[in-house]
Length: 505
Image 1: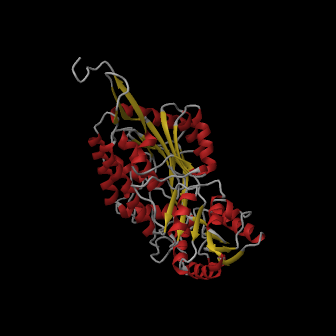
Image 2: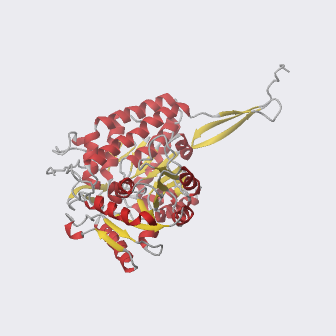
Image 3: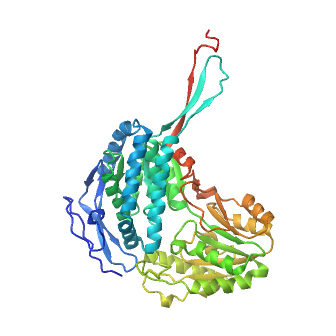
């Protein structure tokens, strides 16, 4: 890994050169409010999960400063909403182009603070930028509709109005794309945004703010605040000037935010936890199915809400699948994200490693078999070697909980009806995977699975044109696609009466 000398701007905004980035100005550590970089007296440290080295310190705002951010964004709303869709689209495309021009630096920041591989980080930058382009184009197509009138001499129609200031609370596992997916939709429809990134990964958010500043967004339209998570969420949820709240994170925290937002009746969109089933249908080639399951399970080192948590295999093919899966899993390279051979990076923290170990211990105590996963080979304290747990049962935590680690649970099933029932046996309903050739069984799974997204014979399922979201306790609303505007707008119905009839009377 390249030696890093990471310097920061001080309270006056000056910079030191950084050999790890081509553009040192992208490495910001102050909040961005009303078009200005601002700070408070206290800072919090950010560590590289690969080696636990401190990579910088970020200003932690006080309550009054967060309230000021809300006021500034609210003031900007009256101007931003009245711009033409073409004008907002041009701002977004300028931001989009700057992001792609600085792709390598944004990816390197992500590797340093989040731990994912450099290739994954580059992919996330591209993925995040795709949402900006999509909503820049969709801004010109936020149509209303004309309604055939049931009222004599009246014209009925709807228009889509921006809802107001949107608060966006984003996670550490996708520190770039979860911001752009939310912010692009809100900005395109006419809503200023206040972003609260995860404290583990603030630098990706602040780099995006720097590029938004260069794109020329008017003051107050794009804001990033850092600080105590409980305090910031309390302010954002309780302030009536915030009209929309979008959160990606755990179901537990999502429920807390919903309660806090209830008093001001905000429009809330929630992308919460997942417990994705991966269903191998009878007759599927086990090598091909195991390869796909490896990809679905270990994406983002398992720290992904779409990761396959429970893998269901026909009993007749169970033994062969375990052999193939374990062989491919044990070949995965665990290491630092800057190593081009690395496929599994570190987990975000020591707490995440401890949680993974608890899941394994719980399963083993209840009868599961551990295959692979020799933790003595881990290259550092925040690494967890990919582990296969066979013969998983519903009473195990690895079956019930969102794992968020490179631990795969596999179990056998006897019929399609059984596996659908088993897959649905969870409070979550975000994503599901089905691999097979029998179209009748595929169709039965597609319609029977209680998940917001079902992918057939493909691990890749997300992207800017699709409605991303879940059922049950996996969330509310959808992100991306034309439905992405729904979370940041209201449908206004207009009735224009007293019009002349077609004959002119």
